Image: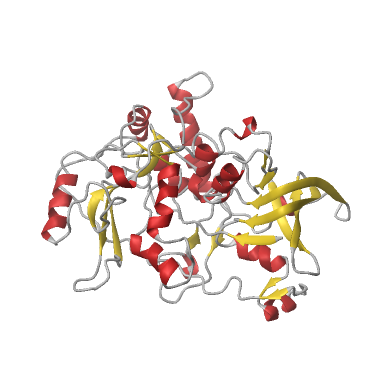
Length: 437
């Protein structure tokens, strides 16, 4: 049995019009948003895992069943894989997710920062950093990882950016991963996409997939000035940065349908109840991959509703639990650095540098400009009225309406070394406030 460890860096994202409360009442909608904002400001991250680890009878294990494929994690990768595998009717698939369904607040792209402080995240912090995270308590950055159907796609900025074509080509040619060149992965991007924005480079986009990609309306009067300034710096204006050319300044593409965030779950799992061969099991926390003496994985132990279960796989177990939880699960299963596992009294099945060499891209937030022309002085209530009519600013994940990619001058490679995000304008008052992060 193979263990497939997947790291898919797609920013997937949703369906329909936003719900205005049970009776379609705007006041209910405003109260819901206000309640969630208040809860985020008061949210305290739990220091314990009792919510997912508490069991009624620790010594009793229940058999959950046999499946062809067991997928751990219903995030950006897991939800897509489950959907694709379920297209083969004879295969039986189990998708385990530690979190549960999302809510209407999560669907509002402009409320992403508040969602960071909720039960939809794992609440991870980095270790104290020497050269980064100086604006945070103890120099510890907040490491966002989503917990729920959709994974981190339920609370990221919902920006759709594939990455540069040369990155994919390097995966194949430099790092020896056949089938991962840009030319070979492009058909899969196109298959997933339902691109509705215009203009776009038709050759590089699909229109029949489940993942809706669109623009939000932009700030009138300001974006043309920013685009002109970028052109003066030598950046080309691109109509589509996910098309033939990548470097330049362009209007941001979002995982957005109407005014709602699109998640991997809403795009790829919405119809799972109609698929008899796909079982989606929320609130199911995987604690161990079961591996036999031949070093072949055959099952997964997980906790659900206070009980311990074991499910067994006939073909493959696919680990797609996120950047932090995937290596953690492998190490708990005996796959990892030998010294580290022994120090925790975990039986070593395979000595492997699992969890090593984690890197994150640098990010600097600090270039702010004020204008003598107001672009956004709306109250929260006024912004919500704009939102239900599909108007900015809450339709943009973090207010980022423009993106720019730039490579070094005189550099032989076309790969950009810098991404510039234009978050214009800042939200008024409390909306989008970073002070409580």
